[in-house]
Image (cartoon, rainbow, N blue to C red; front, side, top):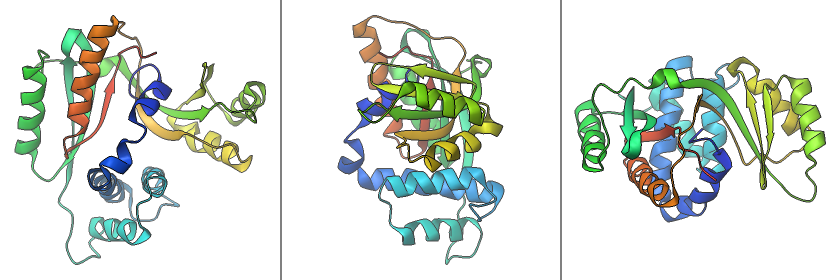
Length: 241
């Protein structure tokens, strides 16, 4: 979950996938590889891999690409993947806390690129212990439309085990414990509820509110970070509206 409003982040990023499809496929491939290496190559028994495959399909990634990525991770392809996962705890400009999730085949390159961008923007890379400000949660976003009833979604999600359901102006945001995430998501899918996104993410326990100018400065840095090939996701506690 990137910030307090996941929907605000999704809306900001709309259209970026088509413009940068090659880079998007690179990130999707790395997530599939990391997930398969961690929990095996069968999506039925590996929740993280299933989510990565679902995200790849939603991003129009070809089936052959997905299968090749899984094969690479499990040593069945022509070449094997040599990626490692790293999470950097940083402060972005204006003391916005962030976790930067990286999947890389070159840790030295990754840390150099991230450090350079953070320090150049006036943030703090070293010694910023911010992980305690985030909890791992399931986050499901449903875009509002004439056929979507908050009351119905609320009842379905709560019955399936959701922890919190938030009614926003343009989207409904559902928060779950990690163990309940798949159950809640599958219950919504079974009722043909279209999901704007569904993922396990690091959700901030407190948020940072800035004025419009400073918020835009921070978001520009986040955009630059997410354009780096090695960076998968930037989780932050900036309040987005």
